[in-house]
Image (cartoon, rainbow, N blue to C red):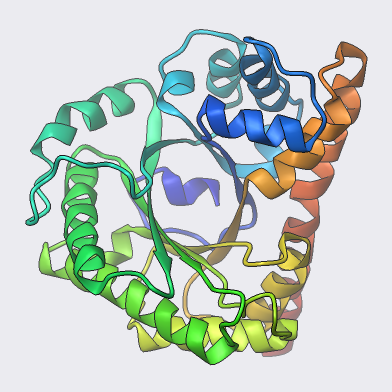
Amino acid sequence: MGDVFTPPGPAPAPTRGLLALDQPDSNLAELFRAGSVPISTSTAATFRDVVLTTPGLDRAVGGVLVDPVTLHGSGASRTALRRNRIPIGVRMGDGTRRGHDIAGSVDDLDDEIARHVAAGASFARWQVVVSGAGAPTELRATARLVAGWSAVCLGRGLVPFVDVVVRPGSRDDLATVGSVHTAAVSTVLDAVRVTGVDTARIVLGCTLVAPGDRHVATADDIARATLGSLRGAAAVPLACVVFTPAGRPDRLTAHLAATTWLNPPWPIGFCLGRSTLVHVARTWAGRPDRVAAARSELLGRLGTPTAVGRAARTEITRRAG
């Protein structure tokens, strides 16, 4: 997937995923508590260093998402990213940004985007979070903002990674979640097209279509519902679709394999964040003598979905030949 975020040129089929390490310190603190890691003022920075200086990380991921502080910093994490030539992405929006007009003006973000590019970023993520009870008017306004942001990113040489996250209610069945998913993705992509941005130049991130906790669905059910939702949203063309876990992060590999077997019309990849990092943090436990074990845990969790996806694509190619 690394080449996807190295414009210009067409996006090849991704073979590796993204690692999302763009959580602010407050979110990392919650992760550390879940992983029983002793917390101090330097814990977050030390953890980022442990992760980003992992030997072989450049071969395990196609890109790393970081927060703006890490991107513009000068510590071990930033040095490792430069040395390993890992495509760097930066968090720019998560649905909480305010102060923009209803038309989606992003003039005030132009300088910010330029600084990120100068610091070495090749892509940026804006996350749109939608629930089953989400307000359509607010979603349309957010979509216009994201569309304008995408245009500015491309003008500055930054690949926009538009990440649509649908959070189902516990009672929502597969059809209900699929309907919300289709509407959310369609609203965002329609706004992008109205702005004049070619969707083939953006990376779409989205959660897999999975039901709420009170319902059960197989990997094949989820794969078919996800692709059906994206087709319903007219999600073509796209540079790539990056899936994030939905409901059961431990099932991501099975869901990706099932989706790959259905031969989607665009390259697909995956993005792992908290669900992976909490295990890495628990293995590390804040102890220097556990750094090697934590790094091994990280590479193992990144490598499994990559290997399964590669095997599925190879088999599909073999059968087609």
